Image (cartoon, rainbow, N blue to C red; front, side):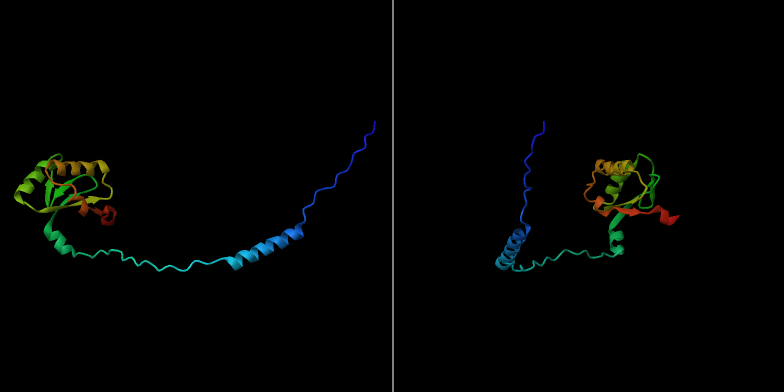
Length: 143
């Protein structure tokens, strides 16, 4: 049996009238747009850091130096392993009001640095005063 199929017309979208409508909308939006007025710029003055001569800092502070192997010196005095707390307590009694500065090597393990901070706390020295002056030395530059 042979069935007769009815061919449907393919639906066409008229492109030219759509382009005309798009062009009219584009012109409308360009003409009716109000542009933003430029706002006044807020002038912000950022704080600057003044360089303090190193002579004044070194005169007012004592240095706790820790090298890459963990050896500690308090000013020029070598501190034996585990005795930093007692050395700091005695140093504070001899030099009341003298502030400390911590110099640490770049290769120093974090655990050792935390041990130094723990000794400072046990000796009654506020850590908030000491970490502000941490200097990181590069031991590779010396080699």
